[in-house]
Length: 153
Image 1: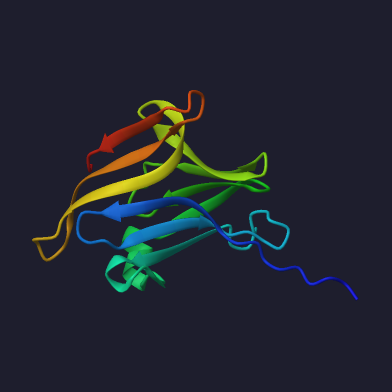
Image 2: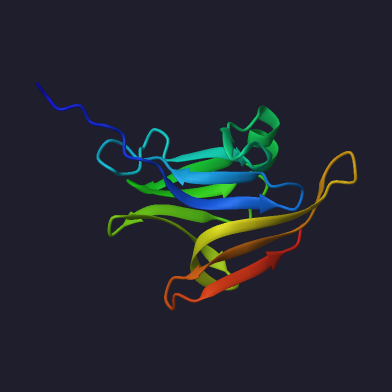
């Protein structure tokens, strides 16, 4: 009998926090039974609800298609380019390196491992307005924390 491969636990790539509430959008590397990025669905996206003790919840249709969903394209096996649908200017490379899964982008002109995106949102209108987003990460070369504020187009 062949052994049953259990799926490896997913690994957090980065999160999106917002000013509107304590809910957080998670972007996790989805790993297969051998611990590598699953080519069928390499990245999964979901909420944790701050007001519900961190309960995990799927994105709804509008959230997936207009705000927090992703577009992925394959660069090579186990290497993908991801964009969040509301932040098409920010390309994030998701890949495996030395047993780690990385989310790498450019922050303030430097290549960096992305840890968090913070969205400053004014929700006093019928449709929320994004004032700015800020990227937070660690410089790939120096290991120093870095950030960059991005204003909307």
